[in-house]
Image (cartoon, rainbow, N blue to C red):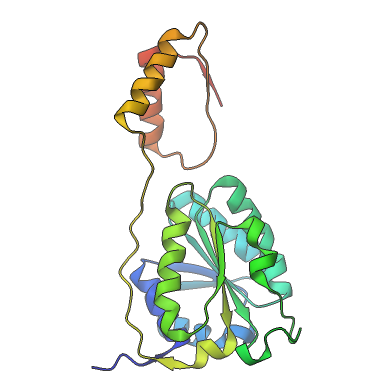
Length: 235
């Protein structure tokens, strides 16, 4: 049985598999194939069209911060990506899961500085946990799956994927990935035993709390820990 689809359709199908129900964008001709597929999937994914890429990226960052699920944003190449970079920086600083999809020049135009081309791997490396360019339509499921896993695992943060324009319009018989699974870090029993030793030996222990990812359960667990040890705390 054939599963032949355009790159744009494959990409949107992966978003549905990974549970995306809301995305933000500023439309651009560099990723029209994705916009066509999002229109076809409008009953599953609500697309919010924004006036400027900085606003779209900030909305996606806020969504990720409020839900713990990756905020999804689509922007076009060049100025679109540079405007959206402020949202990536916020997400990186605040440990917010987010995925920014960027339209890119066609593969046969690469390295010619045509149509506002930027090497996003060099430009956005310091602002993301991972940045890559999808080389072919049949690898879209692989790259999107890795993007979701990277955005939510360990210390959460933003990921950027560049989408060559011709890659989105080519067809491929690609196999869909499975839905991402969140992998959370946790201390080992011996690690907690060492913490207990340190606290027992401390003269004036003091807890400083901060960072992102705070849930109601995390707050309750932290409060129980502080009260059990009689620790003062500040945020």
